[in-house]
Figure 1: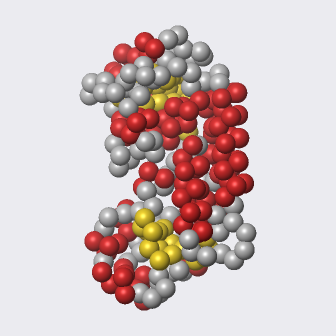
Figure 2: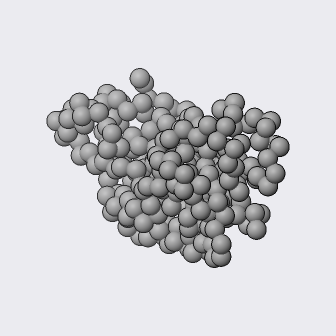
Figure 3: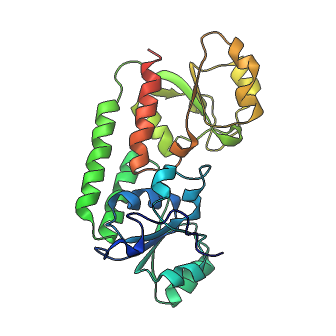
Length: 263
């Protein structure tokens, strides 16, 4: 797959100036979003192709448009000649081995399970980029947003209905954010774990106080949901589901908004 050059003008354009710190290619949509915030102009040579797809990205389209993207192939990385490759822990072993044999430094990041995990990842990414001060600024913004939006008082029972009709587990970052913004977990109380399917029939028979819909399955928009007394349905952008870093700020604000209108 060739390098995706659409929208590469701006601060992510390698020609926009000498990078401060190591040049970087990110193959992970969650690290894309953090590096877009903390990297110096010209330092982030490319982001992952996932960040160009609204169905998989945690970045806004305008932010993603500032950078070139790759499909994650060894050939594309070689062409960009970065000092550092940032990837998911799920990077194919053959790809990682090939990059390291060619002399590239590869650092991997897993999914953050909590806000604290995400803050630690922001600090690590900023350190790898030689941009500790910018990382500290982003961490401060995340911590302030959480402090401002944390809820006091009684929990409101809610369930997050994700694409495919599944729910997040208690070890998911979005579940930590829901707890912090005053939501009790409907799915945990009913024994539903990570990626368990929540059928429409169960929602109808045993509705939560708030149904957060982040999918587009037929059942998630069924007319019967309109007939359930006391049930509130709210949309939740899929872009806010999976990644931490700056996404936490927007996700927490959306959850706090929903909770505020539920009290």
